[in-house]
Image (cartoon, rainbow, N blue to C red; front, side):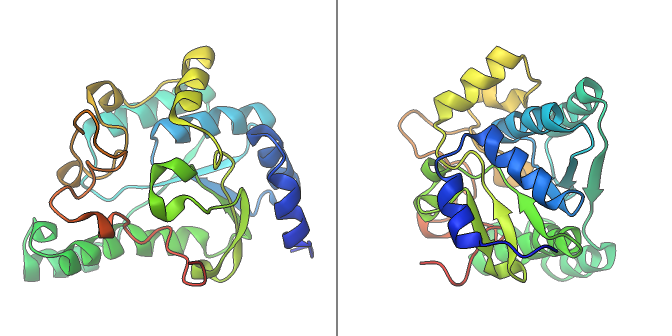
Length: 239
């Protein structure tokens, strides 16, 4: 991996558009860079941008085994539109079998600790495998999604994943900007968005939100607001 001045690059990228950030990231790190997509609205925007920059840009997803059918539908629609490969990572079947045998199918409703265990096995560990040989990864994070994300940078060091570079090209985008881009470019999207789901995760852990509720209120709705992350984007050295 080439040596880069990440501090100065990060400052420079804050002034760049999402497309410019992605072009720099691909020019610098490809093929040791990939986009982690859950195929929500932000993610299909990024995929469209990536495919316009270079059609062999890498995209991967984490199939937890508990996703909505609408999510699988949009994955296939994206593959068909862009003729691109989607790398799929599944959780370890032995871990799943042991967890379900010990705690039950719906353990996540029982406590925050068990919900986080489920996320760890179904999402965090597969992500670690996906990132293992990469020098950088791309996400669809935006600052106005959640209070814990309001300080993210477009380019930053990911201390929770061995210090690789994390690219958040839509960090300064609004929800309106995301949908304006989707409509203008006629991008396939998850139809659950039309049913009041701004943020979509696993089927049993996601519901539609009510008018006036926060963006991620539908995620793990039975918990209080302090636990609305699954562990994929925890950065231990950031406040």
